[in-house]
Length: 483
Image (cartoon, rainbow, N blue to C red; front, side, top):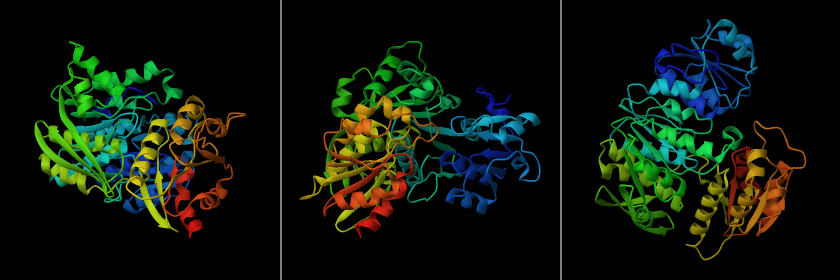
């Protein structure tokens, strides 16, 4: 195993003393929780204090704020392995440089997750969108069915208040992140692909390369396992048809989706069919058939995409041998994930929600769900504060973002959240706004956004803060301004 080795023998990773660079991140902190529960010595560093850092310190991790070579000895001796995120942590990080000098293996978060899953039946959720929500629903369903699965999720389950857990059962549920191809580390027993749509082109370069990585992921499913594919999504359905037609493909493919989608793809065996849906003020009631068994599924989070995600969670649990009705009940009790259509409160007759959507399809889904929810009332508009994430994504999908945002009645565009990217001269959120057909305004000053929203919003409206960056901090500020 070499420094920043892309191909790691998972059985060779020594997890007795683990140092994690960027330990406070959503994915890294979850791995740290499981390692601590398995009695590993865990240390790490991050650029700032956070709730995750505080919780990990309380659980026994030694964590430094700021990156420095000496952080590798926070636990009293050098670690057996150093964990990093290739996308978020530069390779000249002093802790990575020290590890290289000392001959300490440096691996990815995904490698450690893969090592933690060895010996378990793994249930992995992949796709361009919907991974966190579907993974969370799967955990809730399995828990209701009496299993105590281990899990690692990119967001926090509202009910559990955590993003990871070391369970007593033999099932491990996790998101399979395609953004850097690292999900090819895993060997799932059951793998779900919710959708396939071009994204992360800054890493993959071409749409063809991006689609190919899902084909490669399908080949990672175990011989006795199942690949579960959404037939309502053109990209996922095309992959399913390709695999079914390929005589050399060893994976067992099953589909799920609405009755119309199932009918449109007769080549793919469909094990879960959504026969009808009814939108109510408390969510969606779906009539579904799973392997010929009819049942009624309640999905509390708005949106047709959430009904599909819930169906995938139920079908995956069923293929792992769990009781169907218990799985359905578990999804019905699921109360959401933080930052996924998360309700923050209401003031002055205005409801405020926050959502992580940062791709045009995700923005379309959340705004469509908001419109469906408003349709059950007598009045109200959709008001969105949107913060684009990454300059490259904004440039690549400016027209698509504009089309999605035009589903709202009023649009407030924040400046672009660059994250790991440097600013691009002459590029700001107005390249989206100039194509939006709804009323819109550009508010580049972050602190001015709550007042701008309060000026626009009227009783009965739904306000959504949307994006993968700092926009999430504004939901409560908007409530205070409304009040």
